[in-house]
Length: 319
Image (tube, rainbow, N blue to C red):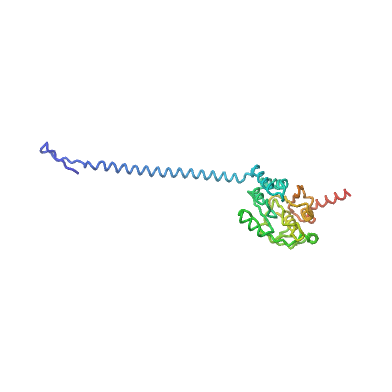
């Protein structure tokens, strides 16, 4: 405080006045506090707004991703993949053969929440099948262990397993006779192959292969071009049993057999997939549709009783 004496008026009491410097300091401090308060409120308001925007954007992206995952593969992409696989591989499947498989997988993916595709053979078209069944499960069974290892390293998303085949093409007739003698035993059409002693059964596959209900099965392996090759006898038999024994999903299983013009593929397909189930032959590709069996008493071997009766009546009428 400052005490000022008025020299011009004697006898007057001193006048007490506020320090002139105190007013600006008080006003400045008040202004500073107000600015800090405004800054804090603005900061939290902006942060809250940005959080809301980010959350809304994330929710929209998640909804868009979920919707996209259930949308079938665009026809243009499907056709491009098909064209690529056919034009870069002139020694394996033709474009018409691939188109037949593609159409079936596409229908399966559209009709089922999750299409299950099993392929015997890790061929040039493996990535095509995987891409076409992008929202389903695709497994490959391959005889060449090194090929499986290299392919998985190059394409980590591929689910492939090496298979050891005990059969040889030169044994096809003996193995067929052996299976015919066990149609009501170890080689019956409805069973868990994991515990089968049938000589044609593949019983060392991963457990899930026996547990899953396969919608589409393609037999394009193992090799079978010479007498010492494994041949596709076991693959065809196993595919037939998996189709008849499935527990869930659609009642029908589409089974494709490539190189259907060869003796092994034709004879074993007629025996276990049954000629009555053959719906079309496109090039070297045989297309069968086999139904699961709910009652084994309705089966005569791998044929249904009704199909066997129809075959017998047809043979009689032709005679």
